[in-house]
Length: 403
View 1 (cartoon, rainbow, N blue to C red):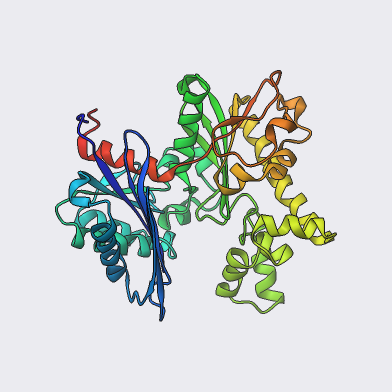
View 2: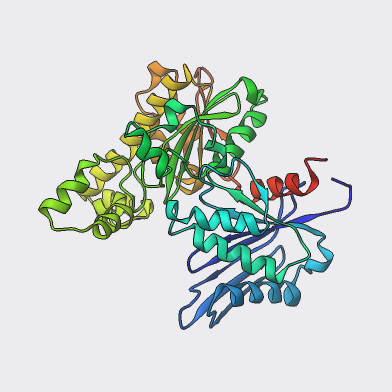
């Protein structure tokens, strides 16, 4: 890159929302950010934040095209002026790259078609992501657009980790394998935490715990993912806000045969009415902790299950890696919930994992070591920054990796 200041507009288009950031990919700062919500409803909402002001509006936003048009109008009205921000790329988050994409790509008509073809693997995400891409390309036609895939970091998982033990022909015909998710975050954190600790990422074994309303774990050896907890879809793995995580597949058959549920009802149960919400009625861990403090026995069990599942993955991935150098907690829960961090690592001293409860206490806005000085494994809280990661990957694509 040249010495001239540049920026990247990062767009994360959901089914009824658009999140965005204008990012300085060199310094890492968010120059401006915001969200458009309730797209398609009677009244939508917009929030646009700069380094000096916050603008909020409620008005109809009938579709994503109108939503992004209003975002661009806000940049023009209250700043920063995109025409002066030297926007060199628009980076779009796409959830599912399937077997096709192993890294970020410059968007053209073929890429749009391929993302659309992969929609059956992510029916709630890819269509919305694609809408954002198409609207963005129409409104900003003179800037290159780059698709960055959540699954790309896990594209080259070893066959032992990526393959499911089902009929091989069925798996191949229907693209059934472990794809993972949150890969942009896992890649960013595993590489950046090594730099933070002064380690060579190519000689470091790391477990990344991305804990938010959606949650996933990864095992990263020498900078490359070797396993991850989410599978064909983001349902597998850790207990989440509304998702069950790992479950006996026969539960599905049992509910269909004995509870009269059809496939859509079971889908809704496991993805939207399970996890913490299913066990406590609350998907926000802060509310679950409140229920525990009030003596709710069910909430206590939910926390036990939540932490137990994380602990199982820490142990399993320690074995997969042949020993772990670094454990990194990240995302909303990982960065802010000291109870979960302590419970997840409790009793793992024989695996070389020792938490300093005083260091662990409280929320962490900056990278923070929370293990003891004598702990063979370094445990770190490391804030993720998916938008910055997307911005930097987009820059690499449009510049060919040139500095």
